[in-house]
Length: 222
Length: 221
Picture 1 (cartoon, rainbow over the protein chains, first blue to last red):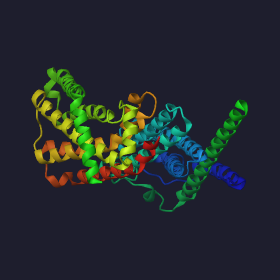
Picture 2: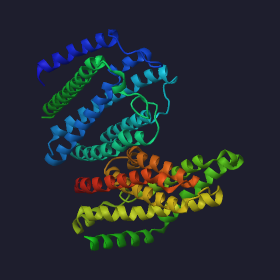
Picture 3: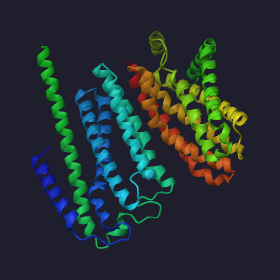
Picture 4: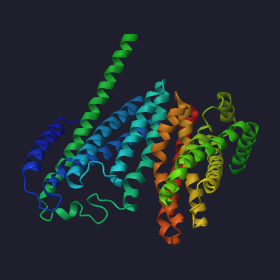
């Protein structure tokens, strides 16, 4: 990863935190200041979905090439995506306790998110219970692709079938309804990009740690 | 290909008849589940409305089907795998297993319906719609769980893994099935359930085609 990208991501995130907390936002009933959750909560979901997609892409590549590096990358992306997902759930719960009155409201979006996390926790359990590294890589790649495809109806289709109180669905104002003066876009888009770059950065670090520890293991046995 | 699948299906059926204890065990499992539901609600029959009925029914079916499908790969001797591997391509084995598991799951779901009707009560008003939902959801559960069973059979503690890996994957089938069942119970206009039926068909198509593509990778090991 290019160094200037990392530096840029850090600078943008500093800007996002300052501007996100201090800049003017539209005054809306019920939402009030919690509208600022947009800058911190929504990028987590974008990040999670993109990182999981990257994980699935590397799984598919592993099945084609059988290159262990692809498997390690896929695992690193899944780990980072799960971290983003957990943060997304927690920030969402924080937001919901102020606007909906309770942290867990049984909203279809919340349940879909919880299930997406369950899928990837199951993926880690599967990785833990196969001893042979080659077989572990192959089985977990198969499960990754299969589970990701099964998750798509959960996150994207079923919330649209049922009514939801989440902004942007069920007739509630979404992102586009707030920002008539597009002030929020100035913070939101950089936030999404910067968080995603940070996610890629963490994943690449995890991948490199994995590579190094494998090399050390090899040298110890040799 | 179709010929081969038919032969494999007949093999599954003969093997099943040879081990009658497995089938009767499954029947007993389902019966115990329904009976527990009946006992826990025996004193509070009025607390059981149509929604609770649908949820209980699908939970009972889910647990029985998971156990039914799990045995399609878990617990088979590895000699049989090697024999099959040399005899037929992976795809036809998978398709045969999915078709067979679909038939079994539908049988389980219908038996469950019968038991629920006898012991608890029968709130279904639109029988045709209900049957359609049962068949589609049975196929959905069977097709998504067959691949999972193949996965779990290759890992340690496969029985726990089967549940852990399978439940998140089948939740979408289950949620849509429960919603569609509610429409059948309330006897609403058929067109109301059109969306749910279409979603079930789409999920089935996704599950079958993905299993078809991915199974050879599991099978090779």
